[in-house]
Every structure is written in structure tokens, then in C-alpha cells.
Length: 481
Picture 1 (cartoon, rainbow, N blue to C red):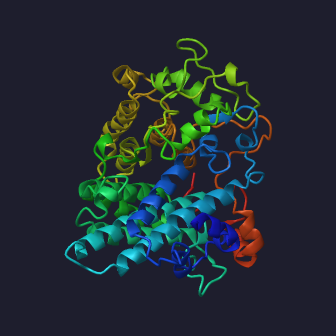
Picture 2 (spheres, rainbow, N blue to C red):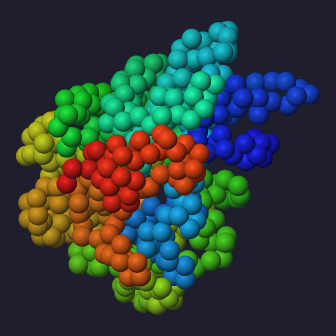
Picture 3 (cartoon, rainbow, N blue to C red):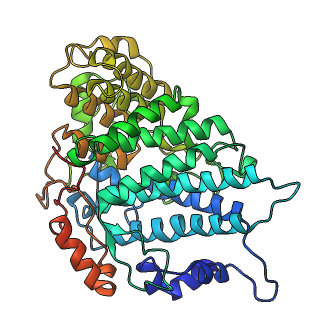
């Protein structure tokens, strides 16, 4: 019912300005008025967030192409950076605002409105609100990292602001870190408990996730001179507060074997019966050069045992002629992560190299842990010999510390397209290919949705000018290299 009504009110949804009260009304049966339970909204928003970041449906998510891990076969618009034919940027914008942030905001309001009782303590209320806030911060940060300046301060108050202004991205990011600092101490008990789809209310895990998110956000802005103090504080307090220490800590959603709770990649690759993707030569060539053992689990050996050939990025590739996506990725129950231990380990190596936490002398240890965590997560063998490879070993691998960390982070983020693309944007490695058909440069951001240009034109125009133009190659405030 909610989706039908929201579709009918698409103008409001597209500018992210539907009111909390109106939204709650959409979820009420007029013949049986009741408030939507916060746990339902929290669960729905969590799954929407993970699904959106995991899906490979080209109508909603093309991050695996932007990270050049995959490329296409018959329909190659997305691998050639056509954002508009399928209105892809609008899909991500709407999903994050409407089905994640708005649901979470309503869950927060409903939690706040729930009276304290013998079965609902103040600690439970505070913990639930903190869990809601942490996932909201994750979603907001993603929008900033994708678009730049976005509607923020006015976006959830349509009663006052029908057409919300765009806030400065750096200012938003700093505020998100402030909000995260406030939320973490309020994790005092299991909160949503068994109704929490990520950690089932495990308080220690939520704290590690929160601090790991803070670490990632601190690393993201570490190259911004105006935010250097904010970045250093985020990194140091995150590490002292306790970040991920193993794959058991990963912020993952566990999917099921039957619809509608299967991994969306299985839906797109198997249930659909389509053959739309092969592995990109950008990734296969890089891994072949390193003789990377993870090829056996990342990819199929459809060309023969030990034979891997990636499709030329952006070309009309024959599905049967190039290396295909591995079976683990296409498993309906394959968990999907918002943040994992491998990623965190590379950020710890980065922090050490910057002497923000530790010294460069300890960076190699975290680098090795990041690679090992990726191998473990994928069930790959051969980690010992791989780390001894002169082109992998931290002491001898070519390039600066940024190159070494960036290369291995990009490899480890296979099947997490947004973070693979962001590793390239952060560290400017490895060298990506120019798409065969369009020959366009690799995008550094999503352009704003066309709906914003049409419905919120004045604020869109101001935001476009503020960031240096609404172009795919406009660099965002944190992308300094």
C-alpha cells in the first residue's frame, strides 16, 4: 500500500520532502488506525539499504561497472557511463531518501513516541534510536559520497520546505560525524534485539560497527585540509573505541534461499535467466598479473581450468567468450556487507601511514590483515604465497603506500561495487580503462537526478554551481588526488 501511494505522490518523493506525519498516515489502515511498529520500519529500511548497495540491476545500481569489476554483454549503456537512459541516479537518490532515510526517520519518531513501560525501558528506547541513527548516518554519508552537496537540513521538513535547499557536502559530513559521536554512547542494550537483521541486538557488534563507520568516514576526509582536525579526531576515537577485529564483526545481512529474501544478485543473475555481465578485463588482467588465488572463487573457470580472460571494458562482449561471475556471488544466500573487516584493516594501514594512529612501521601488518581477511571471507587458499609475491608484499610492491593500499583494497572490495569505485576515487589506482564505445572518462560522482532539475530547479542550479558543475567528472570535496 505504501509503495502505491508513494508512486501516486512521486513529485514529493522525488524531492525527498514528504512529511513524517503524512508518511505515517500512508501506513495506517483508516478502518483500523494504528502506528507502524518501529521495528518493522527499521527492518524494512535496513533491507532496503543493503539491497540497494548490493543489487546489480542496471536500473538501480551500476557501481560494479563504475568500479570496473564487471562489464556488460548485450546492453552496454551503463558500462559506458550513460546515467540518464535508465534514470539511474534518480533510482539511487529516491531509494536512499524514501525507502531508507524516511523509513528510519519515521522509526525514530515512533520509537520516541513509545511510552516507557516494564517491557520497554529507557535504555531500550535509547539503544533503538542509536541504531536507527547509525544506519541513517551511513545512508546520508553515502549520498554525500555519491552526489556531493545534497538536501539535508530541510529534506525531512516539507511542511516548511517544499523544495529543500542543498547543503554543503563538507558541512554535512562533519555534522554526520558529530551525530555519530552522540549516538555511540547511547548503545546501552540490545535495542531491537532479535528484530535487528544485522546483529540481532548484539551490543558489542553495534559498537564495533559504529566505530568502524567512523574510521571509514575519517579516512574519507583525511586529505581535506579544512577537515584535517575533524578527520584525525574521528580516526583516533574510532580506533580507541574499538573497530572490527575479525570477519565475525562484519555488518552483513544474511539472505535466505527463497524469495523475496534472496540476495538480489541471485535475482539479477540467476532467477532472471539473463547473461548480462562478464568480469571486466580491468580486474582480470590485474589479478592475472599477480597470479591472485582469489580468481578461483571470484570467477568461474568457464574458459578452462586456470584460464581467465576479462571482457574489454565497455564493449559488446560475448557472454561465452569471457570469464563469468563466480558461483559464490550468485548464491541466493550469499551475505551482503555494508562494512567488513578487510576494509577496516586497510583503513588502519592508511591511518598508520599518516601517523594518525601508530606509525608507518605498523602499516604492513594491517595491510596483510586486510588481504588475509578477504581470502578468509571468500574461502580462498594460497594466502601465504600470495603475501610473499614481490608485487604484493608491502615492502616490495611497486608504488607509494597509497598505491599499495589502494590496489589491494580495490581487489578486496569485489562484489561491493560502491567501495571498489570509491577506492579508485580515494587512491586513484589502479589505472582504469576507458570504455570502448563511449570513450568517456571514469565518473567521479553521480550527476543529480533529472527530477531535481525539473522540480527543484532553483536549488539544483545553486548546488550545481557550488560544486563546480553538475558533471560526471566533477570531483567531490574529499577527492583530492
